[in-house]
Length: 212
Ligand SMILES: [Zn+2]
Image (cartoon, rainbow, N blue to C red; front, top):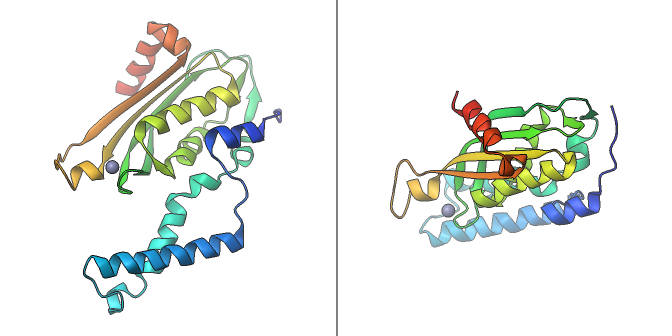
């Protein structure tokens, strides 16, 4: 096992990660979100003082802290002690990773499954870390295309593999609940890097894994 020299500053800047979750600032942010929720309640025609709504601003503020915790994930903690040097060059596939995220256009959920593969180039990461990498990018305000790309770029950056493939299947509540109201508002996004981009056999093998 090996602790790799990750360029944290680069990772933080590239992937908009801040490791420093300041407690005082977190408290201020929470109060501020609570006030905003009161204002929304009033302006949709509700009475924020009625019993059922009294604790709603507090609940919503806590919820946003949880649903956006990807902004404060420490990538070093996330993958350190889980990077291994190995002499293994076969495709690694982790499929059906369940995720939920918030679309940045409406702040409504989109959720579904992510499928990730990479072809190592001397380094692998513990399998349980792949879902946590997906989560780091899901727990933010997102668009599915960017999330797909970020998961692929992050793995590419950290493992420097021969190739990375990410396919995400998502259902967007902003399409299910409003506007055109398509109940099956499914969307598939893909990113193929390195060997997966260059070699259609690798792509086919990965897509076959997902289907089976
Ligand atoms: Zn949306």
